[in-house]
Length: 78
Length: 419
Image (cartoon, rainbow over all chains, first blue to last red; front, side, top):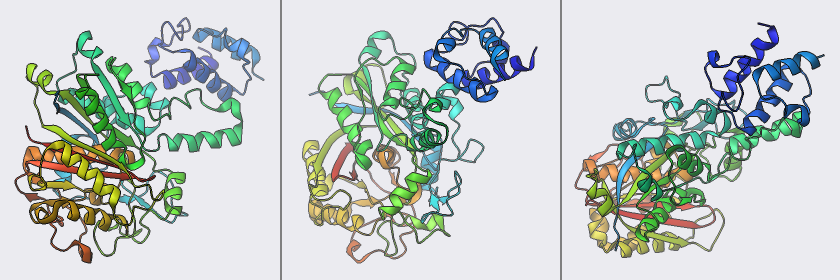
């Protein structure tokens, strides 16, 4: 598992209050992890803070799974 | 007419995370006051408060028992306290498994005086330091006063009236009174009613201190600071927490074999129409509020055995309230006991009226009245009144009166009696 994946999963566990083993790369924030649309806004903000990246709203809308978040961060971080 | 009874209680206070722990500590004359631990208060005029203690404390509060981790992260502490106290009350009333028909007729009226001040303070700093794009998407609904009622309604599926009172320090009493009327008027059969507050944060302490409302002479002796009716009182000590009761229509409660604590028989409301923070110099609003509650109850002053006073430990307010009680009770004042439990847990602001109503209810249940701590040298105006100094007192308690008064000149009184 990449370093980005570790840090993303840690943020997801902390923000959504879910068990770490549920946070697989395939997991959907809404369907599998009980998030609502505002939780995703908050997660995206936390990713921006953690990784120093900007995630514009149109990109954020396409982040629906843990893997989406990891891929976006890996391709855009400085 | 539909009668309203109390069938469940829930408390989060500086003396306990539940009803029985709090009550045992109140009766043991313990104080919940201490140096403020939540933030560095050394540059404030007031260094002390009655904080709800952490879970590992002897009488601490564990938020993980009833409030989801995610909700805890998103909302201000007053909402966490309120959800937990509501959950306790539902469990105590034996209503954890309500069917849909019952839940359609069950509502919530849990208010707060100020709402999410710590979160407003901290997110304002985020806005100033990091810009609008870093403000939490949960900022608004995590701070709103009616979001205890909202959260409780969602958590327990309660589809009846969803209401939240905001009347400063009389919120808790107004919440219970309004909810009792909703049951009486057939809007609901069950109402969760009460109040919560959590404003022990830098701007909360600074704001009340600047309004000259807080005690500042006892920063080195926090447990001595809240001293209602004592000559040396110099302001209130801020408390925090929540109190919630289950109100239920009497026949409904009887039909399901519920444990009935007491009946809510009188509710009075009035306005001082005088000043935003100072009480009316003749206590006229307090008098009319109590008078209305008593009249509605059909009881006489001589039927009331215990008064839980508003008694905040401010120089002006305590004696004005006592003067109003004297005027209303006449000779009957010789037989009543009147104490201020704010001497032990501080002033819970919007939570006070609900928490103190619960102490009144427990006084009826256990036939004992809680003490006024630190009443070492009673003010001159207190002569001839049993203010229950220092120690709890066993006595007959048939009916009780609870007073709550708030900024803006708002007054509420409740009369409850054994069924």
